[in-house]
Image 1 (cartoon, rainbow, N blue to C red):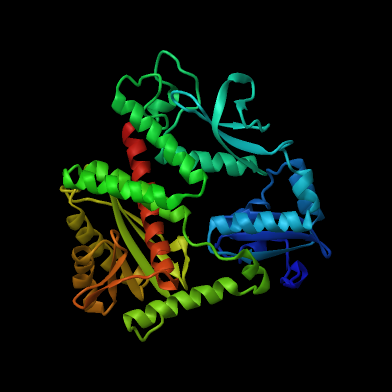
Image 2: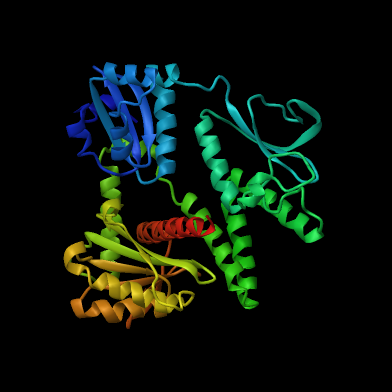
Length: 434
C-alpha cells in the first residue's frame, strides 16, 4: 500500500479557515512546510481546532501553533476510528510535538486486583503477579500498555457509569463515589450475598469489555433485561437497556484505518453507500439528505425528555439537534410522550426545516404515531425496533436488518438519539437533585 500524508489538502491556520471545518470525528495534522509536527484526534474537528485559536494555551502548545504553517485533516466515522488512526500515524511519522508535549513518562495500565471485592486501578509499572506498592495483593487481570493516560481515564469513566466499581480499600462507611452511583454497591456497605454478587458481576463485565468480548456481556444483559420485563420491573429493564445501547455504540463496526489514507473521500463514499442502500430498501425516489431521529428518556416518569438528532448526508449536524421537555402529565407514558413530541416538531417544519426521513426509536406503535402526523406532508417515517433491529415501515411491512451499510447507518443514528436524550435527561435529574 502506497500513501503519503503530503498528498492531503493543506489549509492555512486561521480563524476564517477553521470556521469552515466539518464537525465530524477525525484526525488533524499540523505541518511545518512538508513535515508533520503534530497529529491529534477530535470527536468534533471544528470545535477542537478552533480551541487552538484561543489565548489560553500552554507554552508548548502555543509554540507548536506558531511553528505550524498549514493544517490537514482526515474525516472518519467514529471517535474510536479517530483514536486508531491517530495512534497509527503518530507511530509511523513520530511528529516532533507529539513527543515534546507528552506528559506521560511511562505507559499506563489498567489493573483489576484479586481480592474479595476486586478494585479497578491504574498503574505505571507492569507486574503480572502483584499490585505495585502492595505486595500482598495479586492481580486478577491487567490491560495495556496504553500510550495516553487521557484514553485510559476516559475509558474508565465510561465504564464506571454503567458498571460501578471500587478503587479504594475496605473502610467503615460508604465512599464518596457511592453517593454518585459510581461505586454501587460500595464494598464498605456490602452485607448480603446479593450485594456481593452484584459487585462481582460488574467486575466480571468490566474484565470482559476490556478484553474486547462485547457479545458475551450484551447477551447476558439482554437475558437480564427480559427477566425484569417478564416480572414487570420496567424501571430496572430500562436501566439494563441503557447499558446495552452504550455497549453497542462503543462496539459499532470499525473501518480499516488504511482505507481513510488510501482514499481521502472514503468516509463520503461510505456514507453515500449507506444512504443509497436505505433509499433502495425503502423505495424512496427523492434523496435522503436530511434524516431526523427521535427518542424518549425518563426514570419512572420523572424528568421525561425527548431528543431530536439530525443527520445531513449521513453525518450528525449538531446545530440542528433539539431537546424536548415533556409537558403532559402522564410523562411515564412513552406513547403519549411520543405523540406530544411529534406534534411539537410538526409545528416547526417551516422554521426548523423539513426532514426527508424520520426515524423513531421504537416499533410499530411508536412509528405509527409519527406517521399519522407527518403523512399529511408526505414525509416518510420508519421505526427501529430494538429487540431484533427490525425496520418498521408503517402500513407496509417489517424488515429484519442484516449486517451491512444500512444497519450501520440506522444504528448509528438511533444510538446518537438515545445518547442525546439521556444527556438532557441526566441534566434535568441533576438540577432536581440539587
